[in-house]
Every structure is written in C-alpha cells, then in structure tokens.
Image (cartoon, rainbow, N blue to C red; front, top):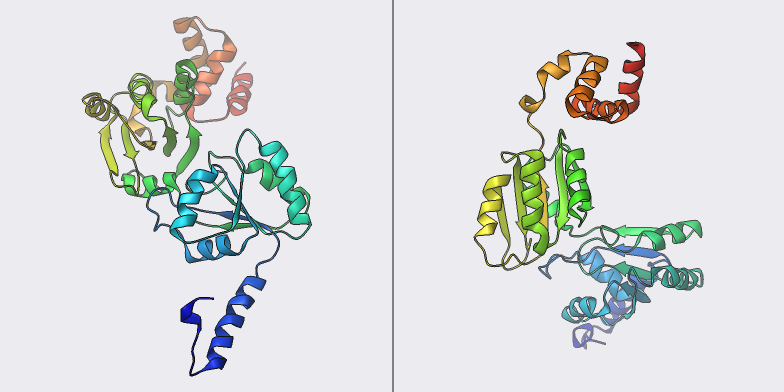
Length: 307
C-alpha cells in the first residue's frame, strides 16, 4: 500500500480509496486486450492502456526485453510472455486456454498497435473462434502519425505494410499503384530506402511526390518532402540512413493519364499495345484496365462487346 493511501485523520477516506481501486480492477473482464504502446516517445500511451497493463494477468510481448523498458518506466509488474512470429502458433493456443480459464491477457508489440505489420492476427482469430472477447485499446501508430504530418492528401489512402524486399517484386508492387488516386503508405527498412526510391523514380516518375518520415516521435524525428528525385538525392548525400522509416507516395496526377488511350475503345487500345509491345491479349487487357482505373473483368466485358 502506498503512503498516499493513508489518511490518519479520516480512516473512511482511506478505505474508500482502497475499495475504489479494487472495484476498478474487478471491472476488467477476462478477454484479449490489444494494447497500443508508444512508437518512440514513452509519453505516447493512454491512461486506459496503463491501467489495463497493470491489471491483466499476463502481457504477451513481441519482445519481452523491449516491453520491459516500458513496464519499468511506469512501474508495472505484470507477468510477461513472448509472442512472436516464430512461436505464435503454439503460444496462441496456450494464451486462449488461459483466457478460457478466466485469465485477462494483453497483447502488445514492440511499438504501436499489435497486428499492424506485427504478430497478432493468429491470436485474435483464435480468440474470436473460441468466443473470447477481443478488446482494442487504441494507441500510437507510426503510419498514421506519418500520414497526418506528411502534407499529402488524407481523404483517400492505403497502408500496405512493407514493400517487397526483392527488386522485381517491389517494382511490380509500384507498378500496381502507378495510377493510384490516393496516398500510398508503406514501411521500409533503412538499408533499402535508397533502392526503393530509385525504383519509385523509374516506375512512377521522378516528379512523383513522396515523403520519407523517419524516427517519428523520437529524438531525431525527420520529414523529407518533395519529388521522388529530390528526396532520393537528399538521402544519397548521407553516409548511412538509420531509424524506422515510413514512406508515403502521393497520388498520380490526373494529367499523367494517356488521353488518347482514354478516347480509344478498349479493343483498339488492346490491339495497339499488343502491336507495340509484342505481348498477348491477356497482358494487354490487364494494362488497359490499369490505365483506365477499371477492373479487369469490366475491361474484358467491354472487349467482348466490341468483338
């Protein structure tokens, strides 16, 4: 019991404090609590998150050593257990069994909301399957913090986690967003950011607006804004690029659309592409659908109507 709980002149007040705190604890039901943790600054955690972390029976952590730094900072003494991509299949079953027996479990990642480019999906789905309540406890998120401060449009956006590490797959992923009408948000490893920006320049064009958000909420927080070519050149001047990175890519400019292709019929455009690029009808049709921002099935139906 803390000294602040004692009131020598008013014993009833002391009892009310203790009983009130016990009542709060008793309101926490057996469930899986998905708790958002800071992405850098340890102050970026909610009062509700702190209360729940203090009251659960066990905290499932992506890395117990990393989470322990947060728990020590706030004097939280709950039991921890590891839950990561290498043990989530077996550990999920163990945690669900504990919750079925009445345990209150919190799931946290090293930073941000669990399940966002981090383990968690398997445990959540298993808990739902066994009718165990799943309770989100919102908190910090790196991609949302980067998005709102980026200066790029936020009315329409898509978060896609990490871009593929292999160059061919990465370029294919970028090709898919070439005509995107919304902001695209990705995480990227610092040792790959130069290669990725070079691919953005080649696939999406040197003038495409991008933002590199680095170390968001941390001491060396930085936002690099400009065209893909400009930001790439800024980073090339550095010996190394360090820290957690969120890459944001602006939407395609409407003027970049091929107006001549838009005016032609699907069948005409398909024949044109087949002749120019020596590819088959299926590949050409996929290209036309992407150009016109329609589904492949819609493009196929239009092609069939013109035959």
